[in-house]
Image (cartoon, rainbow, N blue to C red; front, top):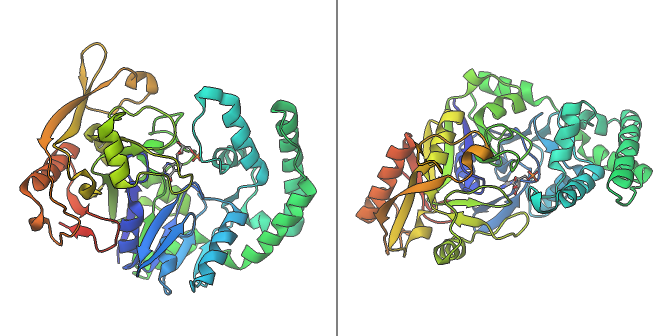
Length: 424
Ligand code: IMP
């Protein structure tokens, strides 16, 4: 038995999907514990491409139990779309379970996400407009609607009406937005609840029982460390805890159940949305990495901002998640660059050098990356089957990242296919 977590160490899109998919193929149970359909990962399997938002990737294996935990926010319409699309491609949902405690994303959350972003003007967060923040706001204000409510029409009608009327007042009177048809929404969502009811089960109990029975469990992280509501670049973050600890609260299991925590990073850095990015490259090298790496958002199609590998960030991820090992993805993307730079520390405006990621935006302001330069490699490494086949400079680059991040690098990704990951 083993229970492992896969976490993003940067700002998301590190290629967690591929690592998750490899580990999911060996898992009996796959669990999503936080976030919602703001996540998006692409899994290429058996020549087919699957784009998953909320459904755990274990769904591609017919005997794997797929769990959506209490910490997730669930858009019923979106998940039904995903279920319908994948069902049409022959995927079975018999093993999907959703915790009754998971909060429901309603149309007013989506409307308010867009209106608040517009209201912020050029100080917007750059959210995915999926209603994530407003749904977590209601959860923490203790006025949210949960999956249990959704599948019980009488309870749902009453709670959704009072929530919806209040939100409608905020939408129209505060933001000057268009009024929503609350009754129409309630009836539409009751229909979704009826279709989803059969998936309801206690994910905390199921996960605990699976662990006791010696099953292999994979906790599939969404988003990433620097998007964490507390330990990310607040306020340019998401509204959940994409850290290893978030897996425990979002599933309802204790930390002693966990055996290993994999942190996934790219061999460089990317970010979508707004916020600070010390090693950002707004030049031809940045374009080269974006185009070679296909760095465009899975959910929104937005071009991702690109930059050099930042070991200050990944070391922060090693600490706040207690990582057992690292996976470095997309090393092949860097082929063809004469020089590879790695950020080893930040230089503050007063000249002091810091090695720990600052806790606030104010502390990060004006920080300049301190770079170390490494020779690049021109060889195409996407066909390599073992670490020994890498050019020496690529091996040295990986060894140096390992040293700087203070964490063993167990896998290196050299291409999008599941086979293009080298276990070291
Ligand atoms: P929200 O999660 O939609 O509220 O967006 C908040 C911030 O998190 C924005 O900068 C998004 O671009 C970012 N974000 C949310 N989910 C993901 C993800 O799965 N990958 C990368 N960035 C994400």
